[in-house]
Length: 187
Ligand SMILES: CC(C)(COP(=O)(O)OP(=O)(O)OC[C@H]1O[C@@H](n2cnc3c(N)ncnc32)[C@H](O)[C@@H]1OP(=O)(O)O)[C@@H](O)C(=O)NCCC(=O)NCCS
Image 1 (cartoon, helix red, strand yellow):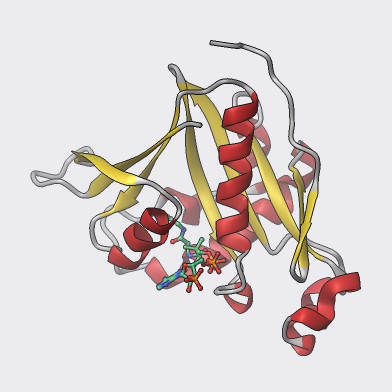
Image 2 (cartoon, protein in one colour):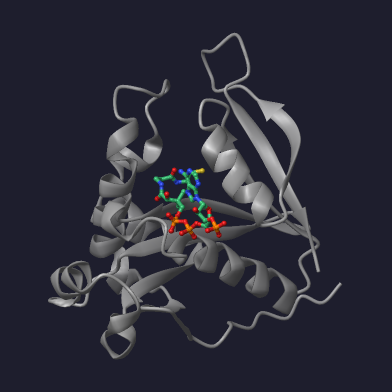
């Protein structure tokens, strides 16, 4: 297996562009995650760790994680809702993000979030596809992630992207499984 590390080129999609994230994006990524996961606050136990992320914790995560951010792409803004695009494009901040790290022979994908006004526009799928491309580029054998059992729409989202439930996991302090481990074999 190749251990070569190479980053995919930034790619441009409908209404948004993706690029590799850097520690300078940490404040924007923390904002995206808190907004994206806000709907789960009080609903999911344990409380999603993403809700507690800060600029500092995300910056620290870059020690062993890489990631991608999605940014509004004004040149393609006509493809999606104009009001939403103008509001989010004003300061050019990220509208979606994902982090990943090497885990064994594969990659672990986590902290995937998209600002609610941008849901359903392909941002989440594009971010996941970019991690899959990164995995292929460095010869990773698989990408794994955890999805709460209580979020079947998210399980369906990842199934559409080629992931399958591989195991059940239980958060510390819980007596029954709380999440699926989902796996996508590569290439
Ligand atoms: C889950 C999430 C990242 C998906 O991002 P997104 O940009 O809205 O998803 P996309 O637009 O790329 O969706 C791709 C497909 O999944 C569908 N989909 C996405 N989220 C869905 C949901 N919650 N329920 C039903 N379908 C959903 C879309 O309709 C689309 O289907 P299509 O390609 O057949 O049209 C986003 O909803 C989010 O940030 N949620 C809150 C945080 C979260 O749950 N993160 C993941 C933790 S495991």
